[in-house]
Length: 232
Ligand code: HEC
Image (cartoon, rainbow, N blue to C red):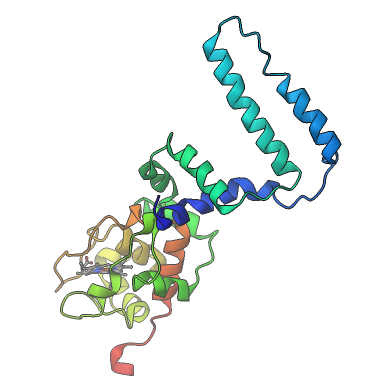
């Protein structure tokens, strides 16, 4: 498993594990008590399955998860290799593509705008994403800056915020748009409105590569672009 792949899904697994981390020593966590609980649990794996193979392996699996939750509840912190092997096991059931799809914003602008209300965007993180210095979902580097630093190819990054207010939202077809709605739509559905004088070159797959946090960061970065190049 590549390290980016691990990083991409580490968040997800940590989100599952963190609630049980660091709870310190709870009742029933003294070594003797653990030993007796372990024996009690092992009792579940009764040797008599009357030849029932499915039942035998189901029991084995449950026993393993019960031991693990017991350790986590008592404050065990899995090491990185242990977390990785748990991820490997989880990934053998779910494809990486499914995991990424579950985390990505998609292209429903109204739903995305609602999600963004709960997110706090960091303009610096947005700038790193925009310039391909930090990866988006699945470890991909976004190529935003590659096009948007060249005025002949795409509208310049500098002045995006001002241009949206002063020029784009003045267009009759965008009369009912809010600033954020226009910006989000430009990123996840670039072909919904194409700017006159520019070819419709922008890829339309970013909704599948960005999490809500990524998008919030990009929006915060682009909202900080309130200087037109002429003002400089
Ligand atoms: C292959 C070149 C290309 C790439 C890569 C690209 N864009 Fe664009 N982008 C364009 C072009 C061309 C337009 C103008 C035409 C249009 O609306 O599609 C545009 C329009 C926009 C606009 C609207 C700007 C305005 O002045 O109204 C925003 C915002 C934007 N892009 C953000 C992004 C972000 C964020 C990324 C990376 C996730 C990105 N773009 C990647 C080519 C690109």
